[in-house]
Length: 402
Image 1 (cartoon, rainbow, N blue to C red):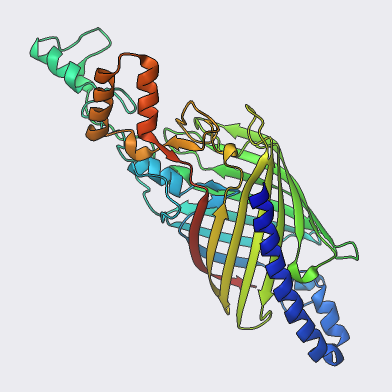
Image 2 (spheres, rainbow, N blue to C red; image 1 turned 30 degrees about the horizontal axis):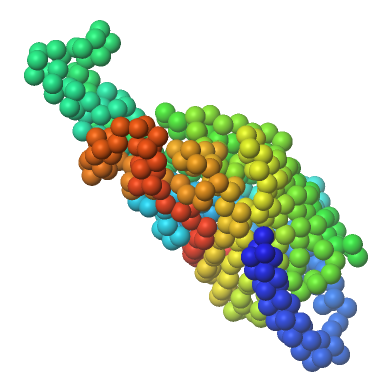
């Protein structure tokens, strides 16, 4: 907890010092030049197009973005799934490219907006045989090669009426990244800014698209956001997201999707605002209450920070995500096949589970130790790695307001 507060406090002081210095310079040099029109623009609806006011100024914004990962509230949807698919260790940076278009649009009702976001995976889309079995009766089935060889040599093609080796072969697993593409639709009402800040209420529906042979995960959350009326140059905002509907079909691990509440505190500062070249920096400190319905643990799920460079409508960003409370991820509700030792900061290394080399190691462990508890302990010591707590990813794209 001390490290969380220290990180957040240092980042906040950094933003405040920069913002105050730049704000004081701007105020001393431009105080006499501020016009009433400019003051109105400062408090204008952020969803209106530049230079336009009133109801006719509502605009549609389209953003096209390509990212090396999609990390949602600390949940690394790209790199961790790709590690399990490709039998590689979990890493802080492992590019899994995604296409992320967004469109925000006004509705006929004043201050009511809609937004559609898609995350379409471009890398590792096809299913893959990550189990590396020589012979299986189905995807996910046990290794049959050695037993089948013995039965076939003895002329026993069908050891039982429901078990014939004529259907045995190599099977791919249902793990392609195309199965994890998702979409989100948001509807929100943005109130007018007042001396108490700006309030926003809304709801969104997030869903992983169902595909042949796999179910879809979806949920609905309602939320309220409050842009605080102080330190406005840092754009402080606090929100509360409440899960009101959850549906999970065929997905063993639900990640952090079933949390009762998600409460983020956000800060953002812009250098050279309203210029052709500008820079945004910001951070999001997210707290999860009852991260999953089984152990009902709570804690800080993520501290997500970014720096974004704008050249007109084009942009490129660097992003860092930290998982302060690792115990939220150290269980079977987050990782498929997590170890039986929860809250030890470790999870199974995907590179130590399947394949001929790992099978040989496990066979040697079974042959060496007769006690099942000792076998389990030695196997866990062999196949564990520390849960990754820091991630880095990048993105670039183009945005346009109409």
